[in-house]
Image: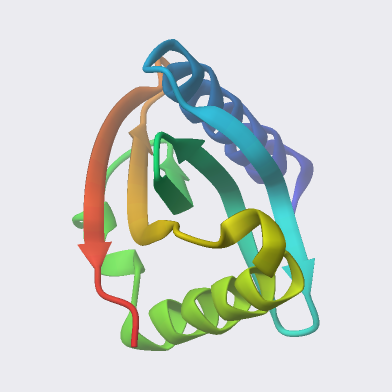
Length: 120
């Protein structure tokens, strides 16, 4: 990934993180990685734990929501299962969901989609 794309992606993730904090979420992790998978942001609010995929684009040539393919969803779900198993003491009695944050343009306009897809 080139520097400009990486910088835009990081800016998008930071904008979403700031927005979530303003909405009362607590950041649990950013860029949680395992072999073969990554979750951009993991947040908690009340009994909810949300695994958030962030997609940032300078211009929209096609709907950003189409970027979250079934294959990508499976990767996120597998990574979330690893997180839940690793931190099971902290995630007991937790309702989890998979959210998507779409970020567009240089002004970083965020469209947040809670429960964007279902886990297995």
